[in-house]
Image (cartoon, rainbow, N blue to C red; front, side, top):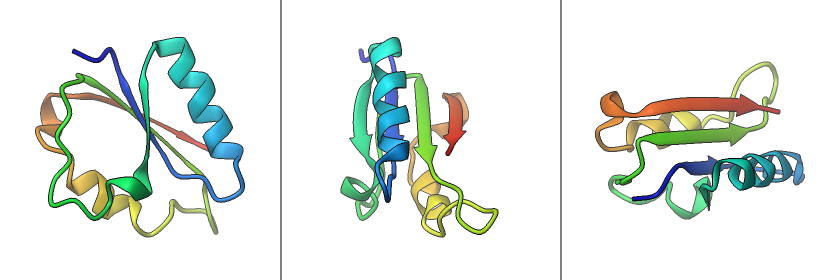
Length: 84
């Protein structure tokens, strides 16, 4: 089982740097959101999921709701977000 998974979206690289640093500290797998956004569902063995993304115009990117809705068994996961 994976300790944690960190999903990230980064336009300029700032969120990627933060995600990489957090993943290192948590011994987590690092996955770009855009590589899984078109999957029917996102299934993870980890009980801890981190999401790192920038804030645009005082809100998250439009596709974040779509991404979050695809995570299987989300109710049983510990989820945290870091906004840059």
